[in-house]
Image (cartoon, rainbow, N blue to C red; front, top):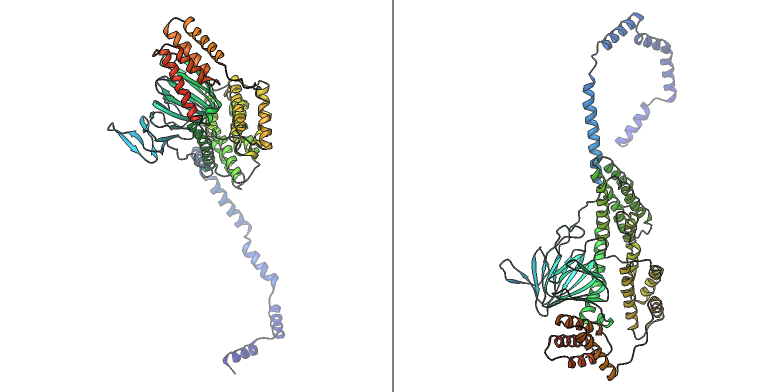
Length: 600
């Protein structure tokens, strides 16, 4: 038997049986008096009456002799506690707010073809072959055959044609523009300007010796030589010259001389297809989409905790506490506006994550702006803050068009501005209509998108038909509709959808009369006699005669028989005179246009 087996057997022999356990317990129980034991315990714990009285007197004596502390000791302690709690509450929002700072985009120079030069500190031209961060008051030059692009943040771009000299001045990111300087000075050559700024924001300013060109939304070419030629290819622009403002819309051109002379003429539809023009219009469409994407990414970076997060109620509570414990009126209003803008950032982030139910934060944004506007009657400063906030919100969505899912943010900002009539001009309907038209012009190469965009646009066109928009906006709508019809008519074969859109657009345009036949020789001779009479008989002073001839040449531009008339007219004027040189210049300009159009 093993040792373990022996141990188990021994343990079994030594263990008491149940009967033995019962007998032992009965013998012990008989000797114990439970009542007596408990009584003895009670007597030991319950003191005698005289001992109770002595103990109570001792307690009373100690209570009565305890010194009463002065209340002045409690006030500092309570104040300290309150301050500590306030500090914790004020700093807690920092745990839930996204950082309000995003890396600023510099003004960049991007050489796109050939070599570009910058004027160095030594006074010599230094070549640039790659991306270059610009500083204020830097001169740039493109050589013959080279081109470059200047990117002004998300406000717009300026493209330099060959043989162009410019000076960059104002590098501020709109709407923070307090310098009062032009964005750029055109000294020589040609530039193409694309503006992506809404009407609420200060425009890009291109200064020349002949005047300053202001561009907000649109595409404009500016050529400077012995005269200044400004052509608007998209949206609008203004030319400021002294106390005069020349307003131009898409499809219009003005020429300015050193004298006070200036003329506004229509751009011929075929000019939209010329090489440099068509190339830049295509570049504008691409750049606008890139800027719109960048603007969305900026807002997403600032969104912070979203409504879909369990911590979102904590974030909103932190915002409320942050505002509540801000006692300075000006700072509190600023924080209310900052918190309101966070709703827009959250909407962009929600849309990117696939959430389409975003009406609640959009309504909260409008409600917050209206709540701040409730103080307008009490404080003029509030009005300035509201204007600044609305301009900032609009500027950060200037590149967004209706084909983007975040366009509803732009609409909400415009509607909020319209609801605050004393703060911002009510042009929301006009802006939406024009944005839809721009989107339509950019969709002419995509049949499905073209039809979708037109169906969205058509209800807004009632504003145009019923004359419920400003005169300038009506002119813009007309030119944009004409542009769409021109692009569709240019197609030799059109689909059913394209034909439907074309007929829908033409319904809003005046009917064109049949193209007149070419003039006969007798009719051309009569036409020239009329010009000569208005130039030589009506006026006697050389300057007045030249002005009248220039007007005649402007009216002649685009005529079916322009070339024949110019040749006959040139032969009928005195040789080598200032008047004949003006006619020869018009003939050369016609030849350049025909070469660009592929006619010659």
